[in-house]
Image (cartoon, rainbow, N blue to C red; front, side):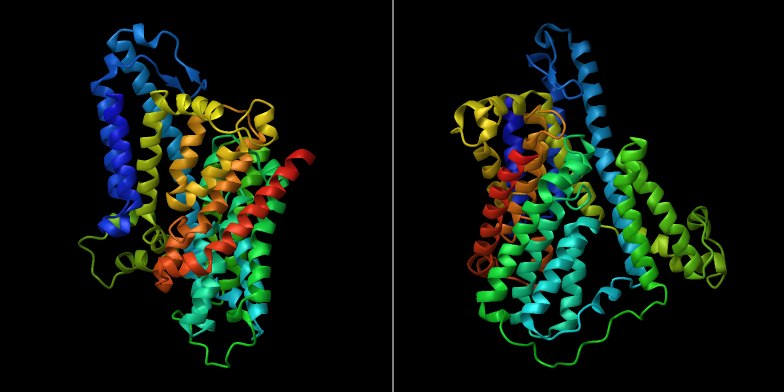
Amino acid sequence: MESAIIAVFVIGYLAITLEHNLKIDKLIPALAMMAICWAFIAFGIEDFQSWFDSGAHALVDNFGEMAKDDKMHIMEESLLHHLGKTAEILVFLLGAMTIVEIIDYFNGFATIKSFIKTRSRSKVLWIFAFLAFVLSAIIDNLTATIVLISILQKIISDRNIRIWYAGLIIIAANAGGAWSPIGDVTTTMLWIADRVSTGKLLAYLFIPSLLCMLVPTFIAATFLKPFKGNLPEEAVSNDDKQTHRFGPTMLYLGLSAIIFVPIFKVVTHLPPYVGMMLSLAIVAIFAELYSNTKFSMSAVGANEGHDADSEHAIAPHHSPVHHSLSKIELPSILFFLGILMAVAALESLGLLFGFADWLKTATPQLGTEAAAGGVSDLVVLLLGVGSAVIDNVPLVAASLGMFTEAIDNPLWHFIAFAAGTGGSMLIIGSAAGVVAMGMEKIDFFWYFKKISWLALAGFIVGSVAFMIMRTII
């Protein structure tokens, strides 16, 4: 039965990786493999001889000798445990996505466009690189990429020039997301799972992540022809949405609210999603006050039978909160649910635990962690390269079940860096790359020839910088 479960996971994983070839949204195989894996576990529970207790981070004693009812009880408890941990991540992401959509409702991101007053190609590149690095640490790398490419489209009309900037934005956004607990889904997973703390994450990864952005940007701005000279004096297209007088206010309020979440966790020791819900509530209050509409959540389903022109019938459509909730990326949320719960199935059977032990002994020993009996740096570097080929979310989810090192062990910070920045080496290797690919129709092989080597240079320099930082801290 274990072989069947592994086969289901591999087939589902391949379907996710080949999403664009199969023309099937990746959330479908993710949800299917989750349900089938757990169904197989339930059917074959009597035959399993080991079970990994994720709460205790150890195998359950004498699991193979237990009665079927006892095994089913342990399985149900594990399923509930994993669902709870997954829900923490999903609720956190829902809150963050809604705040970002509220900012966009007021066209707050148009404020960023006012920062760009030069026509020098190299200076524009540096501005966008630093904006991507900082914004991705606050509103996550995916959203930062969407915002900045949208602004880029309003500044540069020539797509052949624009895609070069988009490639560097991907690298900078992924680098910026790695050092912040709210900057990348994988880093958020490690943070919520209490593998890394905000202070140590910043201390270990800020300099490596900064170098991971600076090195490719410096090479591109100094040596590459597309970034030489000035941009043409072309007419900048008008914004699709009318500028809102509260746009700047909502931008700064929303960003401050998201930054507040790690502070709330440190002060209260409550899970991050609690702070995110408080931040969302505060932002929503101001959004409703600024929107000049009256809105009641309970009124959404109570409008049937009312006149179409009545206030109750039209108010929900003008509410920034209701509008923002309708625009969040629910397919991404369902994908994370499927993939995280599918990985949890492998973890519960102890397969990831055993694979981690094999890696520690089979992989050539490289780095100070390996010398101390820990995980080889080569394993983490391979994980970073692997994240460029396949999705980094399941890779990090698997690492959570594979390794049992304590909170703020350098291993977790290296995994955060490698998984977060390694995806830049291929355009399909990160959410930021995939969304840029869609927005600008960037060809896979064009990116591989023109941008991948820059991302690899940043990844190598950042990894070396991390190894140095690890010996200092």
